[in-house]
Length: 119
Image (cartoon, rainbow, N blue to C red):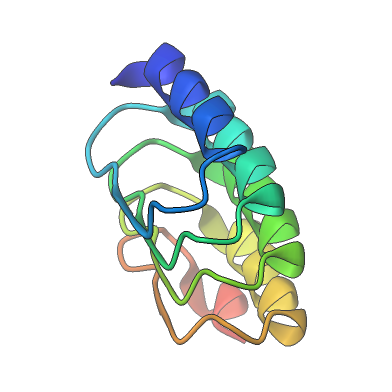
């Protein structure tokens, strides 16, 4: 769906109260698309499971999603596999998990996290 599709979906999710599962795997949304979705997650209270695997989210996208997860109380499962978030992105998500009490499962495989990011 690319960047424009991600932006459109994010806008819709700000108002939607029924969608619980989103699978956006391998859609090339990039950092900007991830930031748009992060803004929606700050507001949306119905999404329980979101798959963002293989979307080139990068560090800045991970940071935006981490900030959103600090506020979101509905997401239970998030897959961010293969998004090149790196050590700093992993640390941002770890900080969010200290606050978020709804996440039960997070997949960060293949993100070049390294030993520092795993601490």
